[in-house]
Length: 372
Image 1 (cartoon, rainbow, N blue to C red):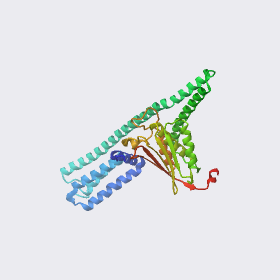
Image 2 (spheres, rainbow, N blue to C red; image 1 turned 90 degrees about the vertical axis):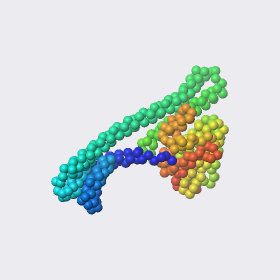
Image 3 (cartoon, one colour; image 1 turned 45 degrees about the vertical axis):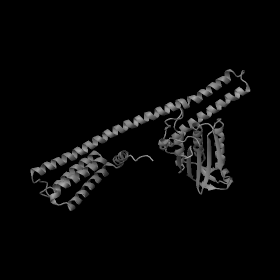
């Protein structure tokens, strides 16, 4: 699990309070808070404890300065100073101050409260500027990551397609039937690779828009998985994929496009990043109204310190081979959650990685529903 970042939490809460609570409500909360705390102090403390009350009120002003805008904080400083003078500094219930020492204390209190408000506001402004710079730097970093990845992932298949096409056009009469088949096969594989990257970019765009909604239809999960595996095996993979599904598994009412992309990305990712002859197992199980899909392998697994980040957008393992945009697994997570499901990744004790997907779905054992 990731460690709790208290500083980040405070920053988020502060930004939420400042930008979500409108100014009139900030003023109202400020006046209410100062008055309530002053009333409690008036009941609890005697006249001789008026200096203690100053520390309490100053603490309240500091809390308000942490979460509200500068004008409500200035109001809190002014109001608390007036209340402290009128209700607590002798002689009480008058704005007059009894001696020069208390006069200095009152002035110092007011100055410190004002400085607290102004300095907190300035710190917040600097933090805002720093946050904007950080977000800009992250955006540039993500842009460069995407650009570098796409420059390889898009140019490589395009170059393969152009080279094979040019060969077919210029040397058509010299090529044997076997040569033509190999070139056409190269075009097919490069086109599929190109299509995968374009699909990933489009899918990520759909997820980022926030308007993605599953279109549910009855799905034969067995038929879908076999179709995906057949498509992946056309790339002449060196791994072996085993499918284990109970023949009596029901139909599931889910978004077929999303589910297909989830399974394809996981299997394609496994084939790209596991050693040759790795065994990949695909299991589909029905737990009442939950479809559980398990995709596991006996490869090398994931680095333990990177498992928490593999579903992040554009994230690629530190020691992974060149290529890839880092979008495949983030799309898997996004589509799974869009269908109200969950996904877990863990390393197997015997070696390899295990992805477990649980998606709630309506089920039916009536096969003719597929044609509705």
